[in-house]
Image (cartoon, rainbow, N blue to C red; front, side, top):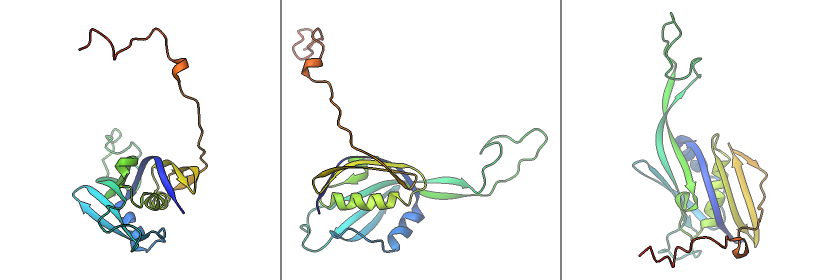
Length: 189
């Protein structure tokens, strides 16, 4: 099986604990990936693929997923007036139970979230599996699998139908004839 990722956009957010629990539960990985290595550098989480022996040279950087990590206050129940809103007249402000939770945000386009080309498609499959665990965010992609273009859309952990649509863009015949030629403009040096 072969594949390539052409376009990817992600707004996925998962609790960091859910990400580590997912990989500690020994998920089924694509056949080209032997193992996953998770590294945290300050506020960056890097999930790197370790290739099966003989798949790629040991000096070739393999694909990795990159997420930013940030703490967010999560309330057990949403206050009636909203978080941080002043209490109604005459009422005492009551403390709403909350906790700080670290979230891993896989946000951005292909080069931001899915880095390096060796084993890129198998790591894209890992990202799709992880996206189905997310309660918040969207993953959209156009990839090639076995010679066919395939659209992927996962919203709030649920796989949605998606299609690839090819549309005709502006060509040389539709460009304006009286436009400014910026390349040969004598006023620009």
